[in-house]
Image 1 (cartoon, rainbow, N blue to C red):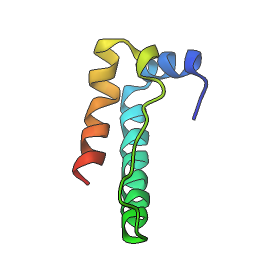
Image 2: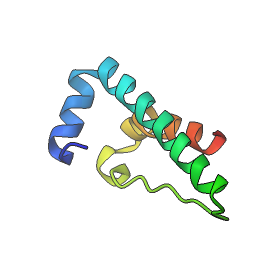
Image 3: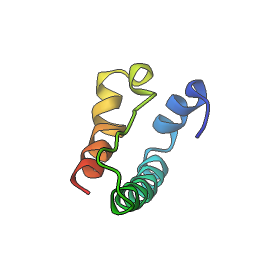
Length: 73
């Protein structure tokens, strides 16, 4: 949603906003993927395209919890 150079800086400058935004995106993704399954999709896949740019600590803080929630949803 924002360029990768700015995104990492923004995550650290505004972690509370980042988590709020990521929670909203997670809920939208779950709703969308559920609708895909309801419409007949046999498989859905989520790509985390910024994982390589985050580094391990940021990935565990800002990506993995939301990916896990999507998988549970």
